Image 1 (tube, rainbow, N blue to C red):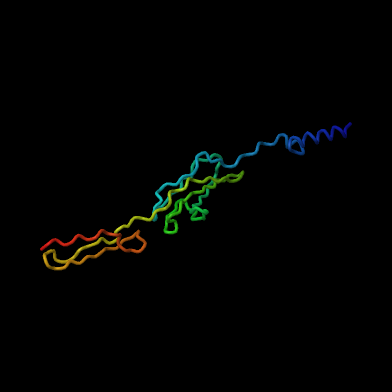
Image 2: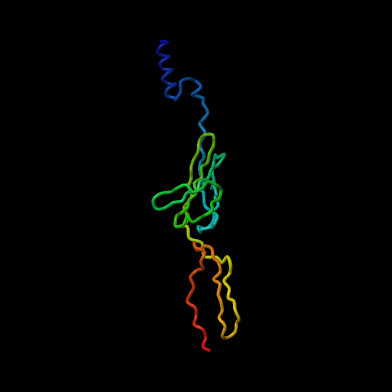
Length: 169
């Protein structure tokens, strides 16, 4: 009879998921981090602009890691891991997304932001303003300095409309 009781006791402990009395009174397992609001990106998708990570809202998280990803139609590649990301020429035409990984003693969980619009080129910006020099009187020729520009990729001035014909004498 004692052998049957021993088998029955062992079977009941196995059914409860353990091999001894301590398994029956074990504490419930903790949970990993849970994203309650997804991460988001603050800033505009324009070359030269700095995007800032908003981690979103989490439950049970003790620490975080961020990673920026540059996404084309084919795949996403790592682009950075700081709390902010400076958009450069390599990002042009791509969408950028933010992945946040939250950690606690039970593990980790990832959440990803919505991607930005495709990164646009920065508009031209005059670094050195254009200038006209010479005598402002009838007869002498005037000289023009096109200035220096950034955001056009070549340092050349932005396209201009054709010059108006000179006034009649």
